[in-house]
Image 1 (tube, one colour):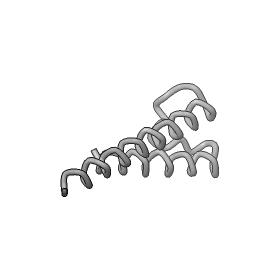
Image 2: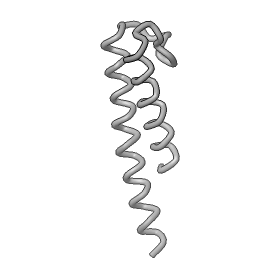
Image 3: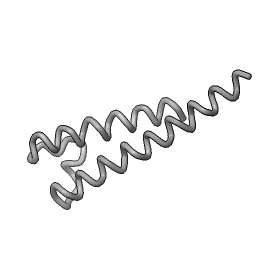
Length: 66
């Protein structure tokens, strides 16, 4: 869960930053209709979900060590 969360966090943040710098560069979401706002919301949601997954995965990893 930790690795999946980190990967999703990185993809969301990187895609969001790329979209903010160049509005035409939609990255992985170029297949998805909706435009700039929809793509930005999806990237932000991916980053938030990735952050939650990574933090839960870290908590589980620390508790399993004890």
